[in-house]
Image (cartoon, rainbow, N blue to C red):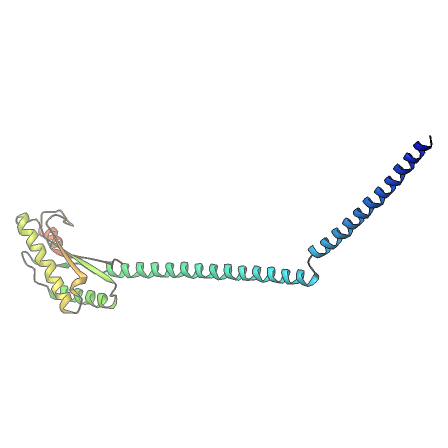
Length: 206
């Protein structure tokens, strides 16, 4: 009996020491956790710096987006201006009249020379444009003869333009002979319309 009481007393004592030890460890862990939490949390100064940095980055991003939008707008406006200018110049170029020739002739009339002078002035002012001269004939004569005559008519106009200062490389010629009449009639009025040089002005290829 006495021995049992001693054993019970010792067990109570051991349990007491265990509870004290566990409680001390838990308290120590709680203190350590509070310290680590305090160290992990940024200070007010660090928070303010982070907020200022984030705000600066947001402002820089907004400014970059604004500048990009302005550049895009400027490019679109310039493209529209360039297109409008090109369309205007093409309309001017298309306004140049065709020149006409007498039957079986390729010499330039005074009226044809005036038209070519105006065309040369325009081409000299707009150096980024080129021209193709088409030579045409009425349908009297053989196909081969009319092709050759159409070429001589186109070359006559080209020679006059180059003499006025237009670069030879900007001018090409082609003869269609009798193949593309503007009037298919078989009378002098129709034939007179078909004996012509036609001008096609276009921007240089980049």
